Amino acid sequence: MNDFIGFIRPKITLYITGIALFGYLLFNPLDYRIFFVFLGAFGISTAVYSFNMITDVEEDVVNSKRINPYVKRPAGLLIVIVSFLMGFASTFYLSRLAVYVYLIMSCVGFGYSYYRLKRIFPLKNLLTPVVTSSAFLLGATVTNPITVEITLNTLFVMLPVFMISVLGDLRDYEGDRKAGCKTLPTVIGYKKAKYTMYLSLLLFSVLSLLYFKPFAFMLIFMIPTVNLLIKDRPNTYQFLMLIGFALLPVYALVMLWI
Image (cartoon, rainbow, N blue to C red; front, side, top):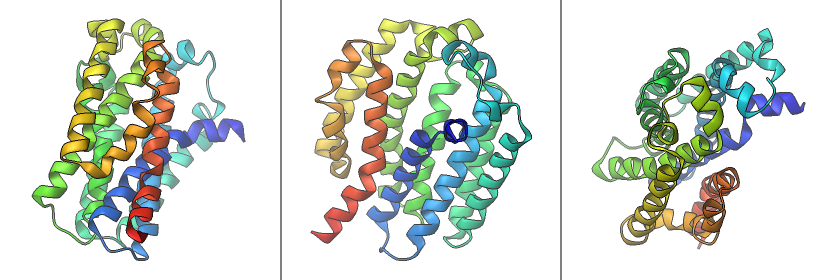
């Protein structure tokens, strides 16, 4: 069971699902379709990140010191296929636009892993925010066209997702460096990548407090714990950011009830 949970990476999938649900709750009436937003986002994130684990064996040997058994078993690929199909089927209960967004997320997500685009700088730190922030678009456009407001919010989501991506790269610095992956820390250096994180946190704080106020909830998890980043504990800091994203839909529901 632990291997299965590790393979589907629930920390990542639930945070991406939280982004989609938050987009839905911000721009759509609350009804049964929230369930299909959940299934769609959970399905695509599970499929893409499980497939990424299958293709990232070389880095994981160094970073995790072991290979998840599902990486080598046919069951691993079956999980990818079933998760993808479950999510894809769910989008047909949402909107035609949601179907298109899902397919774009799939092409970029699977293509990133299959073609090992992590080795080409700066594709890793650009494509991850693009794919993940598309989950917000998936949820927001259930009953709406792509408006300026939805577009700006989707673009803003890319900022904290970029931070989470760099935090993962800081954690996996040694393995990525030895495997020849061109991530931000391996290209500009570990310390400079940390400075990029500080600037990104400052920018996110200012923009969320002034213009994108629903996202200011995230600061509860990011500001008081910034000392973790200073002390070179990027994995713990990333985990707290993931929790913040996963709880965003709960925060949105509470705001709706109030």
